[in-house]
Length: 328
Image (cartoon, rainbow, N blue to C red; front, side, top):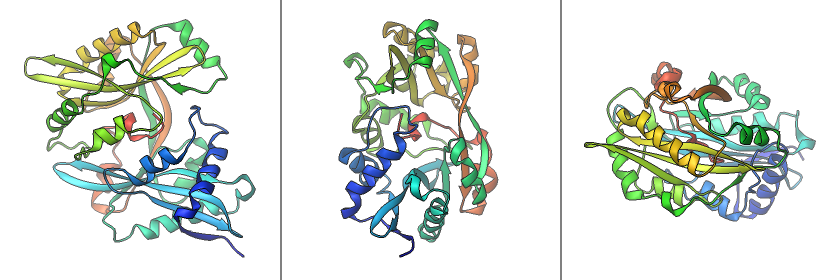
């Protein structure tokens, strides 16, 4: 019997999780595994609706998986429904046989007429060609801003063979969802940036309900202008890595906010701080605080609504956050 591409069924859960873990254990940085809690959080409970999970079946065996993660963005007050094809895995015995492409084509056909206007993702070098062969637009390697606080710790982390583990954040930095929701209202606007559509429940789901990762919050207020940053910390060997995954509120506070983040990083003995470059929050200006630019991973987009094409292909039109990636 040939390869069958279909939507996932409840009976497939154990086999799908097993395939994802066996494939991603080869090259993922983190030690966390995909389990039932991850299944519920990622595939079912998202604030924009459940994922579209597609499987490839051969002789009754799941040999390929592709999840289309539901997202929404907002630009000039207009909501843009989007999907991020993630959790893509093909069993080693079936690679090079067109399984990945068939999963993608099935997904592309399935989203027609659903109101989805945009597809985006962050492929590594191994999968980038597969996206480009299907007509996706390559934005650029994603720039990050990195500030080294403890050089020796950084070097130890780079040479450590250990998988990174998410640390539990000190209660001092406990996330206040109410504050994040207030900041979200001040971040929204009618400018040209594509931003996360922070619907009710988004911050609770993304940062408090994540099954395998802990997050903290740091704020800075000047007059009536307040800015918040959400961060997480990884432990890799004996090195600690602080990643700023989200920013909300006034864009005028970026530099003083990051001074406060650096102070917190020093107190927690992190080796370095990293944040995805964000033009809206003017993170390129962080060079003034000693941050340097480093590119990591790629970004690709496929606008299904052609009226969005020129806009979403401009990298500078995005307000990108690392929180748009499930593993951080």
